[in-house]
Length: 180
Image (cartoon, rainbow, N blue to C red; front, side, top):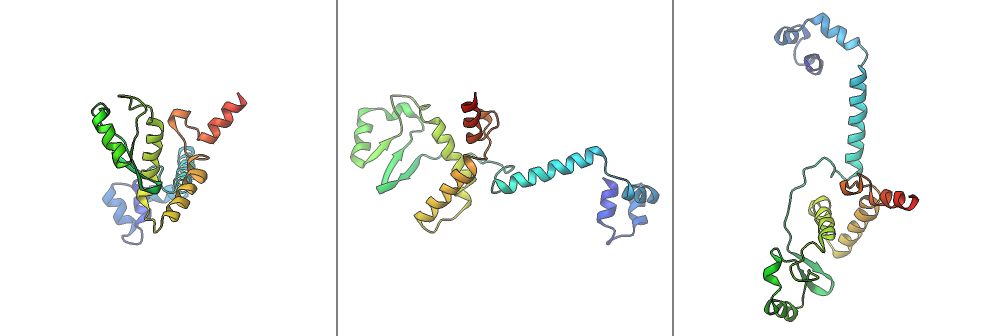
């Protein structure tokens, strides 16, 4: 680590000054420069190259922190609105359901108090918004559709790994199941 620092800053300070300040010998530095990389260093470099390739292939999403967001409404075609209740029990009343119907809003629950029925799709939409939509600005609805199609067909289905699928992509998982 110290020798790496010395090598990186050779243009700014003389080697002997840096080695003296860091408490290492100049001869040790020059020997380090000609020494072949260790097995560990070669392995680390290969892993780093794989990580960088994966990061680039994932459109810079793998490795990035994924902020958690709570989204309650989604826009649907024909200006319809889909309401996902946060606390589902309070939204199952007949009065509230009638109000939703009058406003043209479709409630995102299949039966009273069941918030888990749509969890897989909600997880997908959350992931898609975080990894793609919130990182872009779409000039038109068509541009958004094309980009989302690209995300799903080029990355999400064939390449994105899912921990619930044994760290396989949906396509790889389906292929493995079909063979089994």
